Image (cartoon, rainbow, N blue to C red):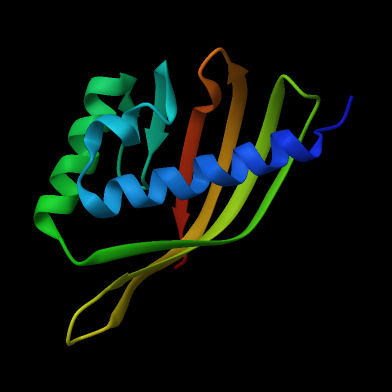
Length: 128
């Protein structure tokens, strides 16, 4: 069965929650976008499990508190229980400089759990 409207909206909310959490330094919410043993590769090394993923979000926010993540062109396909997804990212610094610091694309694997849709694996590929 293809993904229904409710699943597609929930997946888009997951992408938004992920970006909002890292941009506000909320490592726990960021980590709970993933299953407990989920993996995240931001392009410079794999983070495994919620503890490592939460620390990544908190450290990223501390290093760049004005960084903002904008995901665009979110696409998700699946069978109602598992899905694959992708999105383009524009990461920029807010404030007086307003400069783009990274662009690239996410490739994702997702699963529907009792907590809702979550990433099992998320890989970011920065543009060259």
